[in-house]
Length: 88
Image (tube, rainbow, N blue to C red; front, side, top):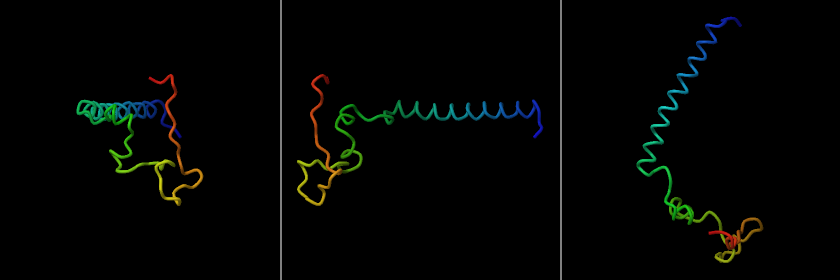
């Protein structure tokens, strides 16, 4: 293959430059998203789920809420459960 130490050094310099460039651009992007409060959703929306607010519908059909028998297939219906009593 050849090239010796100079080729290895050139590859190492390329790696450092690429990692530096990506770190700088992505770091700047995420910093701006964080400052503009676009990086995360609100804690209320996080607890409620983003199915309805961001996607316009529910991701799961709950058995007690569904009136369509065709939707109630085994493995498709999800039951609601209460949080553990130790949850705050």
